[in-house]
Amino acid sequence: MDRYERLASAFVGLADTLVADYDVVELAQQLIDSSMTLLPIAAAGILLGDGAGELHVFASSSEQTRLLELLQVEADMGPCLQAYRTGQGVFVEDLSVDPQRWPAFSQRAAEYNFGSVSALPLRLRDERVGALNLFRTDTGALPPTDVAVGQALADVATIGILHQRILTRSELVNQQLQTALNTRVVIEQAKGVLSERGAVDMDTAFKLLRAHARRTQQRLADLSASVVAGADTATILDAPSN
Image (cartoon, rainbow, N blue to C red; front, side):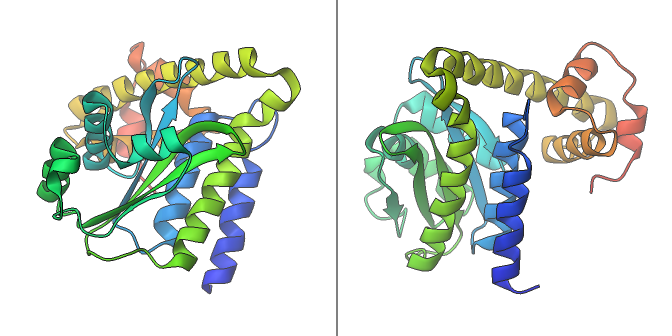
């Protein structure tokens, strides 16, 4: 399958999530998966804003990425926050240059061997709901065609997140975004349960959880809630993660 076919497949996959009662968490993770497949990057993460405009870690390609995104939120600075607040892409070709711009972020990124980052806003005209971070181990600029692909994927995901706002405006969407953010907390708790019970790392725990949700046609949020509530996890831990 060439790149154009993979790109078409990615957009179809994102569009398929935009059904009645769609799962925002799965939509965000689909954006991460598509970015990892289509772009020359090593990791990706999404920060999503709540009704008050505060950002939260919402999806990531790995536990390292999730922690790096969380660090940005806690420090209240970083490329993803800047992209969200300005609505413009932020491109850092070499994170070792001017490390004091975002000291905590730059230090942790270096520890994880990330050399450059591109942060793309999740926005539709004046509406901004979050940002997508694309990390590379190499230094240098992400090629313009890849930036365009990344922004196109982000735009499709943004439309999905905002599509209810077109009908009912901000109050309902803010409630939905807050519910989604609360859901993410439950998912992180479920990952912890599986990690402890199965003696696996957090990345593997999430892959197992997501694979079981897909295999059994459950919403990721519902499965996570049942795991946290004490459901038997043997079938989740014993199954392949892909």
